[in-house]
Image (tube, rainbow, N blue to C red; front, side, top):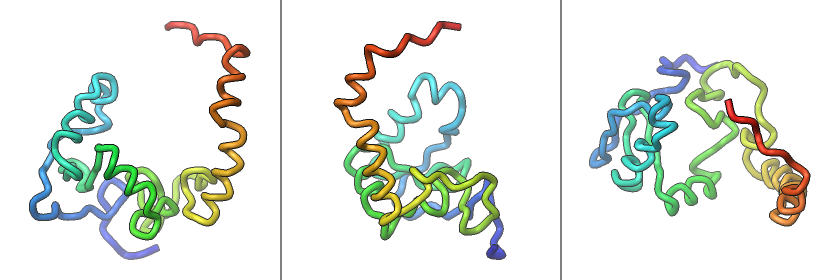
Amino acid sequence: MHSVELFQGHKAIKAPEGVPHLDVDPYDFSNLTERLYFKALRAAGPFAFISKYGILACGGYTVTKEVFSDHERFVSSRGVGLSDFGLEEPWRPASVILGVDPPYHTKTRRVIMRALSPKVVRDLRGHSSPMPNG
């Protein structure tokens, strides 16, 4: 592994000039349940700097689609969370669905999409039970 100082499992970056800062923890339970973080992220602009973790985040559909579609600039094979498996020893096996880039991701996605196509999911609806409350 590389000799780099890690913060929360990744190499923290400095906020780029002109990018708004969000002093919020996206993993805080209230942000996950009330979705206030996502509203603030979308309102901030295409990207926001999350001070607590030293990362950039995007929340609007157009820029998020660009990030997920551009595997040359934005990779998944080094991890899809805060940990950068290119800089530290992975703490879990890589996901064959999320933790890979094309061409491997494309092959896996093709198989998954056959199993989870809208038609297949629609047909499965009658074969499932609602989750119990509690």
